[in-house]
Image 1 (cartoon, rainbow, N blue to C red):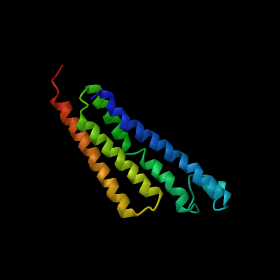
Image 2: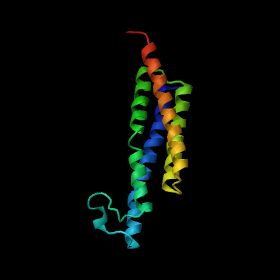
Image 3: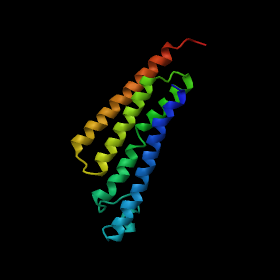
Image 4: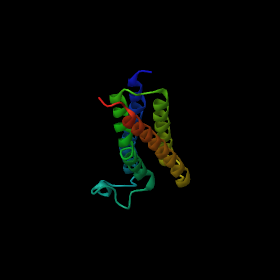
Length: 143
């Protein structure tokens, strides 16, 4: 497996994050056109008057900028140390799939228990990703 394979799931997650970013103005403009919000509702972020369906994409986007930073960093380290394996890439794809599932739950029906379950599973995948990376780093021969 080429070491660059680790960047495929990272690229998909980055593109997904950008897609969610574009959902924010879409929902806001649609709500403004329906007179459900005004520009003043966003003067200092989002006021309490902003309906949940309008504010949720922004929170989902923030979620995609928090823990995934650790994923992106780990992908770069895996590539740098040249130890990308099928298992490593499979865990990376699992993490990305779970993050996408988390976002889909969040921006659609938003069941908290379903969202939490997928979020927890994604964090377990990320933890395994980092544990394997730590083992690879500490077991690598000194140069």
